[in-house]
Length: 146
Image (cartoon, rainbow, N blue to C red; front, side):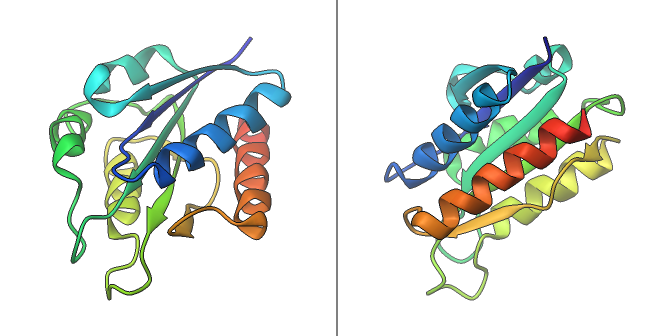
C-alpha cells in the first residue's frame, strides 16, 4: 500500500482542517496516510513516503510560518527525485502575496527533483464546500500520479 505523508503548519486551525480533508480523501482512495504537525517530524521523513504533501499557511506579507522554516530549509537539502508531491494550504486574499508559502514549497519540491502530482490548492481562510471539492480532487489527482 502506498504511503502518503502530510506535514502541516496551522495557526488558526484552517490549514490543519485543509490537511485533514486531504488525508481523509487519500484514505478513501486506499492510501496509508501519516499526518503530522511540522514541528513533530523531520523533512527527511519524506524519504520513506511515496507521496509527500505539505499544507501550510502564509504569514503576513508572504512569509513562511516561523514554525515551518526549519522544515523548509531541511527539505531543500534532500533528493526527492523518486517522489510525487503536492502542496496546499490556506491564506488570506486580503494580502497581496496570497498563499505565497504554498508557492515557496512547490518551488522547493521542484528544486529537489520531486514530481508535481497535482496543482497546488489555495484556500481563502477556512475551507468552504467548493474548497473541499477542490481538495478532494487534488487528493485524487495525487493518488492517480502514483
